[in-house]
Figure 1 (tube, rainbow, N blue to C red):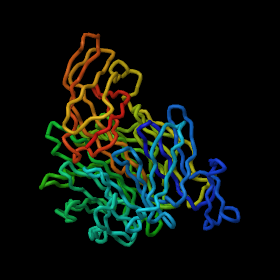
Figure 2: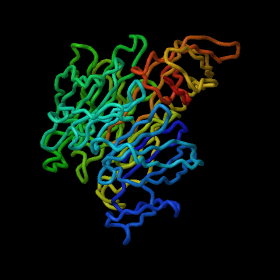
Figure 3: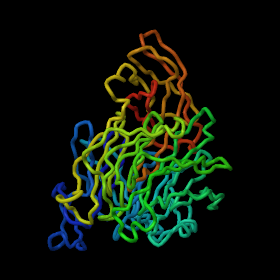
Figure 4: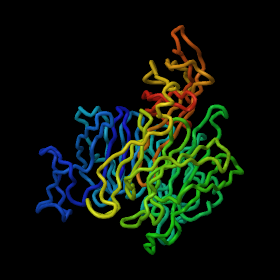
Length: 499
């Protein structure tokens, strides 16, 4: 249901409690008691894991212990690399949890925080780290409000979310993007606003995006395109893709075709308006993953129905590459299909080696390992075209990079390439988002143009790079730093941006 890549290259996998035992066992001394789960033995003792730490390089797994219900919760990495996890259902509704990552062989595990409790119940909410390292938690079911972690600012009403609700909700898991001017772009249903997180004011309402609702349960996705120093990091474009027609969830129209369009808008431009593009396939419950090249992978989901249990049909097996710098009408490229349907409760995350980890799919209220669209225990890695063998002569290797950089500072990166460089090398910083319900919370990319030359060693180069100017462009925390040569990325090094 939820996934996040840690700075150790491991992946946190997180499902929910309350639906019986999973197939992964906990150590005997880590069992939990849940008397409210009728599928457990008398007494509610549950010795199965509902979270795990996965190492893609070794394909090994270690069970983790989560005690409260994380069903449809939210999350975000803090500046120190700790994963903050918020809300859920039942005993998890107002809970905060923390996971401080370690290598797979370590002993790190979930910590359920006794305090603070969330000021409002957060079920289907969205988290976004802010320039100062705090986290804003936006919305949720019956929660048209925002609050902060740490709770240094009071709970605030956010009436926009209430007005964006319809008879089937469509305002849950709002798409929240931190713009490079420090304000938030918030999208719910088919509407969006510019929100001043400091004053609590809605500064502007954007035009409505045609094509039906896009948020849960209508299951579109969204990302912000890369922020580039070429325009002073002043341009921020948001893309919203896919969704379902209004009424599909309400009337359980599981065979109704999904939306075929993407909308793209310049969020800071005072005259910004939606430009609508047609995707190659209708898609609901898709995931949009920012790649180190600045392109966007659209993967997972269905071609009919909506989010929700037993609500989707006709899986969309073909990933699509969205190339934002190409002319309109030529931006989509259809890629190699999978054979595994990835329906409701699927995720996709960029890995440091440039692959995309694809996991999940459980469109049933309980675990169901047979029949149509069973609870899926297999994970896959999708390899974009830049990992093809014929690109090997372009692939850079980072030989030296700093572990920490400060805003606005210059830093040096040493890179080797098999052939002499032609053109500029980019060093692109990509965050590690929290992926759930077709939206990667906190996903962003900041471009750094590297300037330098050879150091006397054949095809080895030293580049002077300049860190982003402040936390509005890239909030503090750990980023995957990729060297990119002619649209072919290296394996990333983890770099911490420090306030």
